Length: 471
Image 1: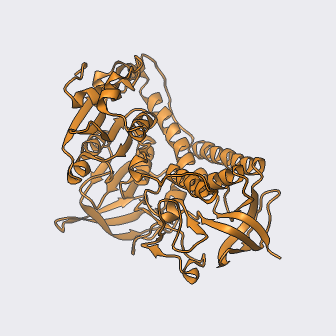
Image 2: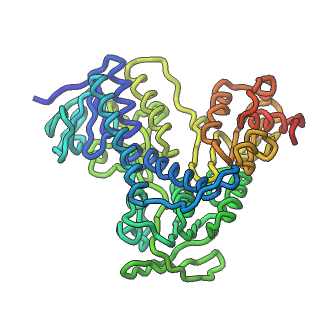
Image 3: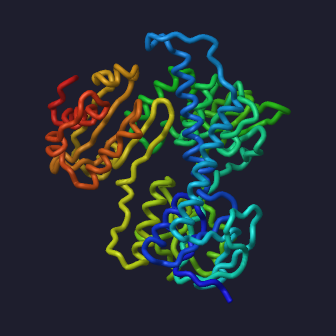
């Protein structure tokens, strides 16, 4: 006889475990199925451990420039193994924390690989290394099944990662030794974060992007500013270019790079990182058999996580872009609160912030200036540079930009975009403003504390209306 639940969540990444916990809080009998890592890719091999690596790089950068702060230091170096060990320790701590939270909220953990065996039925094949107290393989049933299986690195034909010379983010996070030279294919968040990390740690880094702009989803002004900063650090960036071939040697790779005019060059590096996006994990779940609609490698859902088949839902990366942990979490909460009969609202993807934790950091929410104009808005645009902010200068971080975009007729905040120190912590202020439908007048009348970096947000808003003070 199958164990019966109200909700079974397949996958324990940020979307999956948060959904399971919220489900249990709502009084639903809940289980989550996982076969490898509690916390999923994000906690174990993505968002969190990469931030630990980048923090080590940030501190190493400051240690190399003590004179900028009236300090002195000599013989500054780092231990690659220790840097990686710290990162893995952070990941392990958080994964254990997820296990604790699931137990605290009385969510059953089923350890294995799940397939949809029929409507309301989940068959689980046992996996190795179950955590203490986890249930094993078998047949389970639930009124509602939520697919939260995440995504994996996309592989381009002829450029497939081999885990030794051509890495995905898995191998890039735990190198056996630091490469002296590196080619990064793709300049989205993953590619740029690794380019920034390895350059700070001393590698010669080249980034190849097929589109004309790095960080393609960001505002053009922000991407251009970031590019100048990266190039000043010594990162070589090739846009409107593609890698057409990889020739592997015993401990190096020679890449053939072709630009938009057909001109090609060869570049030999120690390692290559393939960061050309991710693709949803939709295979071998039994979706096709049940008639669940998919499109371009992801599950098709409505604004509440519902698929084309009643009783089956999908959230997070497997349900399409933006493929971000916080989107997955919020999407899961909306989904399970809808299941529980609460009054919910569909997710507005324009309200989802994006953050890239390179040096300099990049953060944004809403429409870019170009997208706003394409959507038919008459816009007012405000810009404020870090050099005009006292806190930024005191921190030794005078390079950066805050940009805001308003509808000229209504004063609606359409988008906010930032590049510079700590902007990933600042962006939420604009996210809240957009959710509350705050106008430029209300933002201008808000009192921002001094001295803070957040004052630049205020000045950028005032700049859009010709009222900036410090520029």
